[in-house]
Each structure stands twice: as C-alpha cells, then as structure tokens.
Image 1 (cartoon, rainbow, N blue to C red):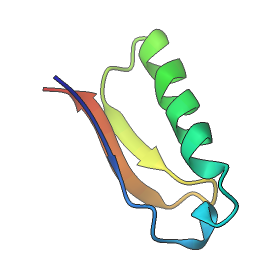
Image 2: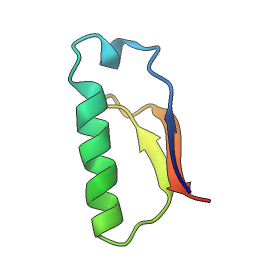
Image 3: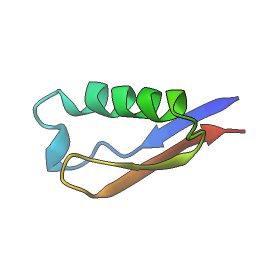
Image 4: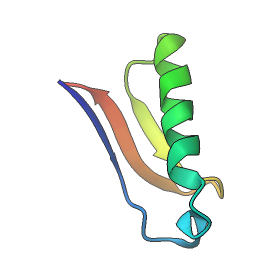
Length: 53
C-alpha cells in the first residue's frame, strides 16, 4: 500500500498549483529511490508524509 498524506490548510494552497507540484515532487523522489519522506509546501513548512506500508 502506498500512502500520501498532507495538510492543505495554509496559504501555499490558495493558487491551486501546490497539490500538483507536491505530487510531481513525490513521484520524482520515488523514481530516485526515496521510498518514504516528509512533504514540505513551497514555503518550507512540513505538511505531511508519503511512503509504502
């Protein structure tokens, strides 16, 4: 099972571009071998995690 969980309740998500940016970043990390990690918004705030369970 693969899980992506992040909080979208901050100013970084107001423009509508942050979710696709985060998902692309997660995909890039997985392609480069990082199977689990924290997720940060464009402003550097830790907002969630992804990984395999």
